[in-house]
Each structure stands twice: as C-alpha cells, then as structure tokens.
Length: 102
Image (cartoon, rainbow, N blue to C red; front, side, top):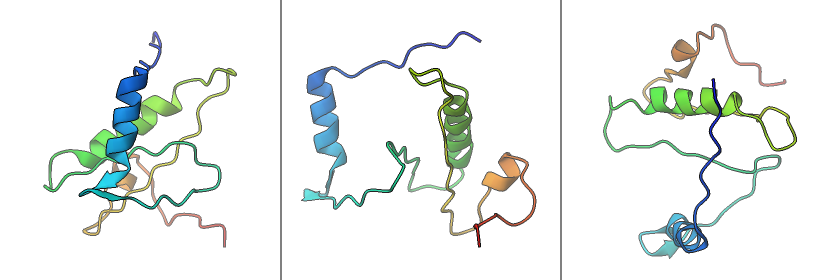
C-alpha cells in the first residue's frame, strides 16, 4: 500500500477552518485540553443510519496504519458516544467489557 502524504491547508484556509471550528452558533467554544491528545476528529450527523460509526472506524484504522515523521506509527483512540448502543465493538470484532484500568 502506497502511503500518500496528508494534504496541508493553505495558511488562509487553516485560519478560516480554525475560526469556524472554534465557533458554535456565533459563540466561542471553550476548549478543555486532554493530556496526551494532539488532534481530535469528530464524526457526527443529525440523522441515524448514515454510516458514522463505519466512517469513524475506517478513519481510525487508516490513521493507525500511518507513520509519524519520526517513523513511529500514529497512536489512535476511538470513542463511540452513541446513546442508543455503541456499534464500534461489533465493527472492530471486540468482545467483553472494556478495561478501564481499575
């Protein structure tokens, strides 16, 4: 598999995206940093059954297969906040209860 470089946004597009991403209905969003997390990708929709979980799994698997500039693989986490029942365990073929470290 040939790995394609990630396209970089132009400075103007990056500024516009940051401005858009930090606003909700014209109000600034309060960002709470998460230790050890550099980037967050949210997959959301107001409609069910459109493939959000499948898309999230595909993004996570693709990112996990990529390498950082240092040659190390990217570390990827995946959180399913579906209130009607998470489908990520089924999509990832995971069985049993999650290990919470307690």
